[in-house]
Length: 205
Image (cartoon, rainbow, N blue to C red; front, top):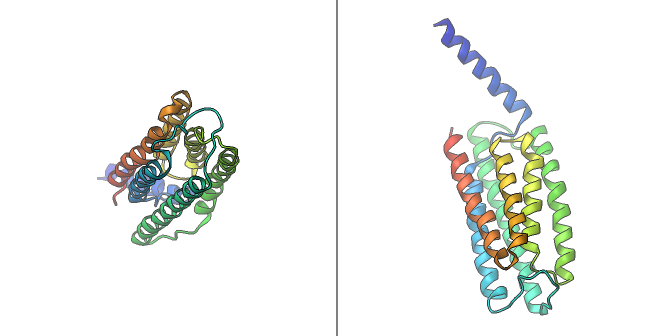
């Protein structure tokens, strides 16, 4: 009986330490929803921009003003919807756990996540306006993976592995540039959904 009580006390101490050092209220549903949004964004960009055009190459291509505007619009809409979904589902989970969503762990997580994301976003914008559309998919995967890897020490351990997978997919996408959009859909869509489901099942309480 004392042994069982000892194990329970150790687990409680471990949980308290996790709550004070890591943001553990990350919702798996946020990963699922952002994955679905990413797939929708990929389909939309293919239908309106990439279909019938040979843009997925290593060299600079000439985008029409309409194509550039549509690509930026789809990218911004996908980003805003993804952030909104992540905030909604994660906020709902923190309320269920009776915890604060905005604390020191959240600040550390966001700080370490946003540095590679913002850097990558600016790099991608520069290449986009220079016409290097083909390398955007690999670059976004790699910078997103680096962001997850950098922030993983402040949240769930699964995020580290997710980051490594995104980096690997980005590197492969560089080698197979013609399939960059498919790799983007797989990395930001399918992989995100799978990891979201995994996290939701594992941390459903």
